[in-house]
Structures are given as C-alpha cells and as structure tokens.
Length: 209
Length: 209
Length: 209
Image (cartoon, rainbow over all chains, first blue to last red):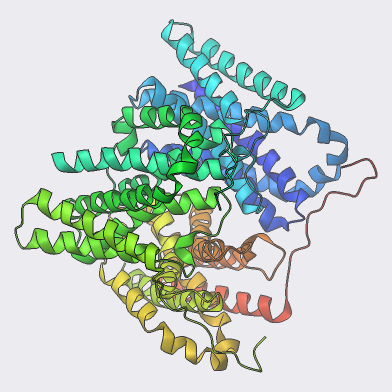
C-alpha cells in the first residue's frame, strides 16, 4: 500500500495547485482560494472514503494534508503572479490530479472487495469529483457534463488498464504507473485534438414544445 | 425484505430512463448521459445509505445495478429517437421513480429503528434527491424548490400511508403498494391540474431594500 | 457534553429561522421553506457527523429537531409578516447559527481524537456548510466564496479561541462561550465595517485569453 500513499500525496499537491489557479481566475479572496483548493484536493477522496466506509477520512487521518493545502493557498499570490507564463502548462496538473486520484479510488475499491466494474466507477468518481466541485463552487457548468474534451472517459480507460495489469499479476507499481500514464496521455491528447463524444439529442419534431 | 429488493430494482431502472431523457433534452454526450442517469438512479439511495450508515452502499453491494444503468445510457440513442412520441408519458417514470424510492427510504429507516417522522423524512429525501441532483447537474433551479406542482408533498403523503398501514398490521406488500399508488396518483394529479402551494412572501414595504 | 447538546439545540433553532427568512426572500412555497430551513439547520452537522463517522446522525438520533424545524417552517407565514421590522436584526441569527455550529464541530472533532488544525477545519465546515447549502438551493453564488464580509475566517478564529482556552484548562462552558462570543462579534463587525480580504487575481497580461 506504500505506493498508494505516495500517489495520494502527489494527487493532493497537484490538485491543490490546480484549485488555486482555478480560484485566481475568478478573482476570489484568500479564503475562497483555500476553500476551492480544499474542495478540489479533498472532494473526490472524501466521496471515495464515504462510499467505501473507510474511516477516518484520508485528510483527517493525515492531518498534514490540509496544512499543505493551506500553505499552497497562502502562497497562492506568488503562484498566481507567474501564471501568465505557465498557463499553457495548466492542463498538466488537471490531468495529473485526475489520473493519480483515479488510481487511488480504483485500488482502494479493490481492497474493499468490490468487483472490477464498481472499482473502475469509484476510480472515475474519485478522479473527477474534485474538479466538478471546483466548477460548481465557481458557479460554472462543470465541463464534465458538456460536450468537451474527454474527461471521465480517460479516467475510466486508465482504471481498466490498471485492473487488467493487476489481474495479469504485473507488479503493483508497474500497473499503477501504467494506469496513470494512460490517463495523462489520453487526456492531454483529448484536449490537444479536441476529442469529444457526439451529443445525444432528441430529434427536432414540429409538435414538441 | 424481498419486496424492497424488487422495488429498489424497479426504481433504479425507471430513474435511469428518466435520467436519460433529462440528459438528452440538454444535448449531452454519452458520458454526460451516463453520469446523469447514474446520479438520478443512485443519488437518493446513496444519501439514504450514508445517513442510515448502511454498508455497503446499495449500488456497491449490487454491482449489476450500475451495469444496467450503463446499458441504458449506451442504448439511449435508440431510446431518445422515439421520445417525441412518448413525451406525454414522461411524467410517469418521474412519478414512479419517486414513489418507489420513497418507499425504500421509509422502510429501511424503520428497519434501522427511527421514529415515524424521521422515517417519512428519509423517504422524501430518498425519493426526491436523485431528481434534484439531475436538475443541479443540468444547471437548472431544481423544480423541488420553486412553486411548481406538488412533489415532496406527494412523497411525504405516500410515506405516511405506508407507515399507517404497516402500523395497522396490514401485509407488508399491500402497505408498500398502497404507498406507491398514492404517490403516483397524487403526483400525476398535481401535474395535471397544476396544484401548487402558495408562495410565502415578505410583504412589500416601501422602506425595505 | 451537556453544554454541547444545549448549544446544538440553539444552533438548530437559530439556523432554521435564518433559513425561513432566506427562503421567504425568494418567494418559495411552504415545502421550499421547510426544505431550506432543513438544509440550513442540518447541512453542516450532517457533514460533520458523516466526516467523523458519528452514528446516528444528530437529527436522526434527536427526532424532535426536524419536528421543531417543521413547526418553524409551518408558522413561517407569521414570522415573515413581521420581517420588515426585524430585517436589520437578520444578521444576528446568521452569525449566531454559524458560531454555535462551529463550536459543536470543533468540540466533537476533538472528542473523536483529531488534532487542533483538523478540529478547527471541521468547526468551519460545520459552521458554514448550512449557509452554503441554503445559497446553492436558492441558486445564488454562495457569499462564502466571493469577496464579501469575513465569514469562514470568523468561524476559524473562534474555533482557535476555544481550542486555546480548552488547552489552558479553562472550564469547558467558559471556553465554549468565549469562542461563540468571538465569532459573533467578529462577524458582526465584519458586516458593519465591510471587512474583506483582497482578491487574489491573475495579473492582466496582453497575451492571455
């Protein structure tokens, strides 16, 4: 389980940075920046722990996690000052946070004895819920729910890569890293070439309101 | 408890179909359709299980539930193509899903040893939260919270019908079906004749901002 | 723990009244008023109990709480009729509800064995989440997340005052009341003199989209 602790730690840091940049775009104050970083960094994992009945919650059991997020939010002024230069790289903490949290969700669900499909679903929920929460707090329609570059699909694919490799008795760290790499590359490619699913639409009928 | 498993199973299917039709109206892609179906079908029951501390969550303990919802979402293209014809019937899966979930919430709460009033409340929460979540994800003001045809009130009334009949030592399936029928008919009548509560308004004062 | 039960009871009543006034401003019907009162009065404490794995939830274990909230909602017509006169006092139930719930969250977290920082965070979550939920249901951007008079900051400060005094072996009720007084006065002063944090903004760059 050591690998998962390292992955979760990285996921918290990367997601908190993404949260700061999201909040700064909206002109929030320091408390708002902390709240959004907190929500993005801990939202998915909290849902995962509640759904799997894991206690204590990972950020209650690891009290240095919220302190690190507070530190990132306090120094966000510095971070944001340089964001003009690093904005083209912004998609990377987003993709990486989703990838890392997806793998923790999938692996913890398997530990809790779920089947493959539910484990992959919990991976997707853990990987995407933080971002959805951040969008909701910023009062935007979450990009997860509109035709936009593939998001949950990348997360789902990476969860299955990990599950498949773990099933084939690959070494745990190798399976975890493969899942992460697949999610990050798939997500970056989706954003770069704007891969979307077609929308499911009702046919336009003259009689419909 | 056998009856409740059948009722829950039907509630999941009916709610997933309602979720698909809700998502299609918004022009979502396949992943969005699945997400909304998932939220509508599992939102209320998840809150019920978390509030009553039931583990595992019903869709983790019954892993075929999310698979069925995935199947419904994948074939939603077919479903939606015919929705123009069946739209007048749309209010039925909505009312039926609410009714079925309300009864599972009330019955499970009584099993957990709550009093009547809290059991009825948990029924209403279980019956209505999926629809609220669907509306929130679609970025609409949930119809539950605006003056619109009675909704939570129907759910509350049906929960009390079930509780009363169970108290009178009626057979369980008879009490359950009575509650469901009351909710569905009450809800359909509310929509048909547009029954609303009056709004509680502040009096207009010249001095107030 | 007796003090906390009294504080929680007062917090529920004060928050329900605040919820009624919030709902009336939006012209909701009786069911909407009850829903918002319920969400404001029980939202924060429910999250606290879920996060700390306390069972049963405080409003399931104290079934008179939701009955009291129902009573307040039913008589809200009377309450609202006089609100024009008492509106200048409206900020008081808001501040008091936040203060009382913050202290229950902090104290229960310490009971559950968390550290100081996590206890203060749980106090803030318990104190502010009800108000956020009320704003979200009313479809407003929660004031917690925009530059507006200090809110979570007051809650956080009061939690630390309580923790500090409890650490210095002050009598429990004295420490609790000190925390409450600090939060209420700090919040009222913030609203009165419009104390805000400055917004964290990205620098305007000619090249940025």
